[in-house]
Image (cartoon, rainbow over all chains, first blue to last red; front, top):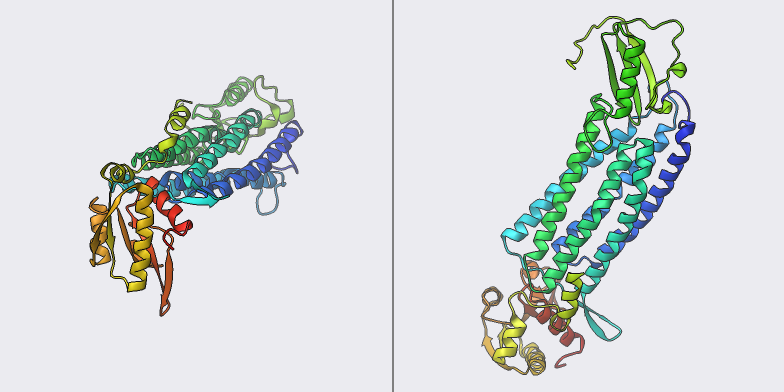
Length: 311
Length: 141
């Protein structure tokens, strides 16, 4: 947490589990990128899926970096600690993802527009000439399995840790099987002589990359501009934040407003229009429906010197 | 699952050509070949290769001669030719426009390498696999 070294005790075990999982995620992703790279040939769908798999390395790397930074205490240069490193990394990753996704989308649309006919040749193995498309299909089938398993294991951890980065990565991983199926249909269709199957699959895959990037961008920017604590996967105020706001409003009925913002996985609250009571201690604050570790700080602003939100 | 079944069912004719070159040759028993401007030894090598390919397709060779690579590649693109035998540079801009099979013979001119290759239309994957097999088997060598 912000001013302490390390993660809160309540989530330390889950943080360790998520870090272990992300190392596995990286190892599997590297194996997929290698297999896909060796098999991709000149198929647009394979090329697009390979880029998506390569970009899939970014979230686990960002998660590992962010969780390391998050464990550091505040210092003379960063008084509020490093909780937001994950949002910053996420923003950078989202922009890169979006850029590459749009580039691939353009490539795929051009291939469809120009009716490009993709050549997939053969390789000689043990005296037999084998069509490279079979290797592409096998690689693509392999590439669908690890993300499906990792995505399923990430989801409960993301929910317990209120980690949007892990949650988004889990959804991306879970959606990757659809990418895999699109790639299989693209290369498989090409084998049936359907020239349009490959670029259409590539358009579907690059579209999914752009969609992932858009979602990641929304989440990262919302936090970086001090947005409200949101539920995982949507933009509604999270139930825990609602519970905290309600508890503070009950404890300080004269307060003009209770403002909330999200810093990484933590919530910071500000009670506007009242002075802090002398005996106020965050540890004594009892909020039903909100895990204590999530509340990073409650501060007080006696005068509302800025325009408060209308709701 | 349905896709896998369809794949298995169609295995005998898999992969297929986008423009159906293999099927057309099988039906017409004619293999339309364009020869580039080749020196006699290279021309002889190219003809032996074409005869070997034609034998596997049970087709007779209908040859067209002496046009530029550009003209023959245009005929290839227009389905007027099934195969072009010509020399293509290792850094030719045509490499992405047509399917250039691994060379039967190579020679060096200055710092540029030329390969005597069979060239097919892009996307004719069954036909391309057949040509590659013939090259690897030393067809007509």
